[in-house]
Length: 262
Image 1 (spheres, rainbow, N blue to C red):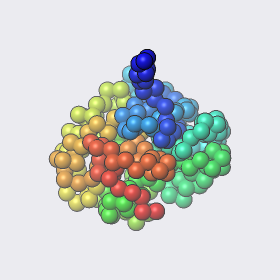
Image 2: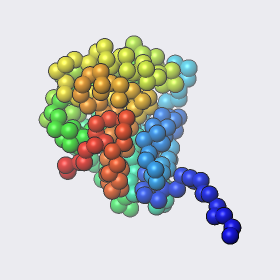
Image 3: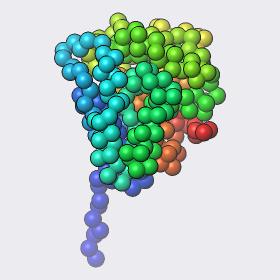
Image 4: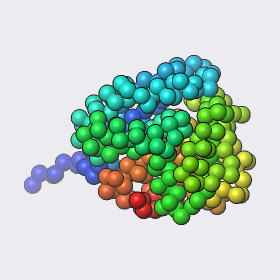
């Protein structure tokens, strides 16, 4: 009797397939989404032009480039092409446009992209963060942004959440970290957050899809004694739940034990 072949994993998304929109030079969202993916969940990315190039030490991200990233036609075309694949949800891995658009503009962006996706749900990080806070029963957050976010952008981020009725007792860009995304590791994020976040915040939200942060979430939650959210983590959490995948992904935050309440 012949022996049956031993099959190896080929990465097939037999449980769910998550689409990902990421700036053209940013490799962090893909890496973090793959790290978070449980067995049977696959990630499929499309790149969207961002109007600044990363050199050895890129300047703070320009507000015009942030605004343009969310405008037609590039991101709309990327969504439409990505949606030709059989996906369950699409995550938009770009936090800062929400800060400029505000909650109403952010929701208008989501609705516009979902028209281009043919109804495949599109997840935006700040909207996912608001849902995560509700699921956690939290009403406040400390907002931490990457060092390449200028102060004006961080201030607009705090306003975004306050406009939703969320308290923001602390908001800052981690400007004393390296300005190059390739030079900031999870240990740098851990040290900065641990040293700066006040006790007044019930949760921590680390914005910016290009900031490597999910690897520090477990250590930060243990040290700070509160939930820690990141842009890529909450976007992936929301996309999973929309795809009816309810796994509790251990080691990447308390949020994965939660279900969205809305």
